[in-house]
Amino acid sequence: MKRRAALKNVAVAFGGLVSLPAWAENWNERSVSLSSSYFSPKESVLLAEVAETIIPVTDTPGAKELGVHNFIQKIVADCMDKKNQEFFASGLAAVDTAAQKKFTKSFASCDTGQRISVLNEMEASPDQKGFYSMVKGLTIRGYLTSEYVMTNLTHYEMVPGHYYGCVPVSPKK
Image (cartoon, rainbow, N blue to C red; front, side, top):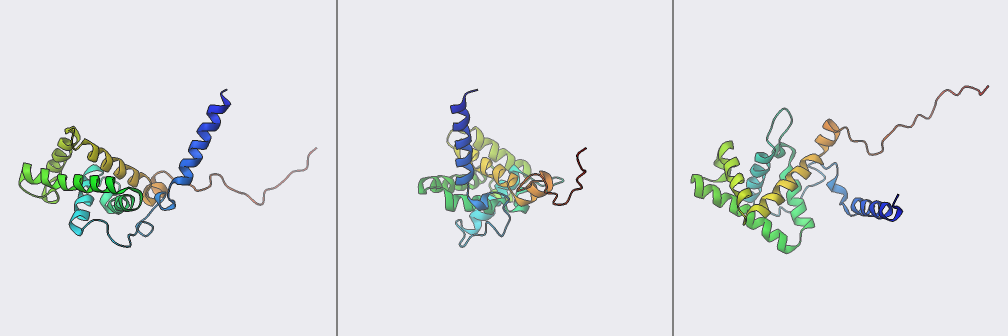
């Protein structure tokens, strides 16, 4: 066994857990509330529709219903540097521009097939692929770490195992 490698992996995992903001795990609408919206109301609606297109409603709530767009806004506002914030905002504007160019209507006005077509083109474009990967990754991360998914689908427990304070003890023979 390579003890140094194992210790290094444990240190990296611990560092990742410590550096993760407390609100980024098992979050809900209240815990990611924004003091002021980072994006304009129109951009916030667009981001909600992009997230909903990536994770739509099925037999479980979609990304929009769980407020994943608020989670993404919080990540962009609190955790990204200015350069990445501008990159994200320009990518978000490019989504609406691509929808206007292809379907002559806004992304929010497009039907599901048209929205998927716009996002697929962005994923295939070398210029827009970075933004699409970023928003897709944040959507998936936000969805999987939401309170709804962690409590209803994954049955997350903060501390695994149970403590039974009173158990019968039989005398040893």
